[in-house]
Length: 115
Length: 112
Image 1 (tube, rainbow over the protein chains, first blue to last red):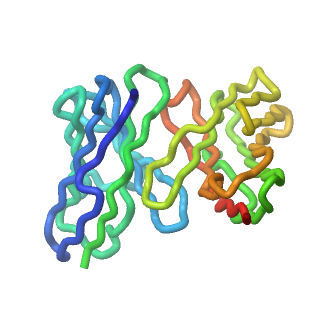
Image 2: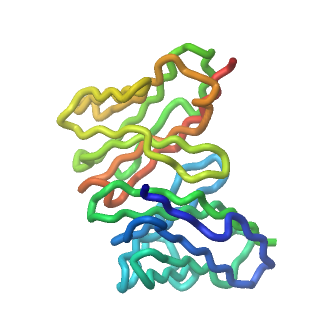
């Protein structure tokens, strides 16, 4: 149980385009979803926290207009990287939890490459 | 104060040996200390976690040692196996898993 999926698993796009990444909790309802960013051989950095039906809370230094997060249902959250640039190339990982303060279950990640 | 420092950056251990990874934190408000295992191209998976009211927790070959006064905790992998080769992250949070602060990661290679 407690499976989180992400789609796509990898994406290549041209500079200036927007990319949407989906995060789904497959067998539970996620009260909260988290989005992380991981550069090669580096740690995970929390970008934002989202609760179903409400606006996401972004970490300091994360541009909310660039990284749009929509948590439309209890099983789906999306991250849209708008006007992507090569420096946005990274591994994006989501996680989900079914209770406040509960264990976070991580998705497999999405590799974004911006040319 | 929000950082979690992790060492070593990389580690090579022979099969059957003990792998030891250390982490240190500054924020005394942290009350949950999980360890995650991550394979290349995959998301991290929870390995074992400890709360500060316990000095040691063991699950199979994995043991967390916690030193509250020193604000340090470590992961010991006994009888290390090649399948344990992965990147290990320590993390810390306050209020359960609310906001995890991750360490910088340790790349473990267990040689056959």
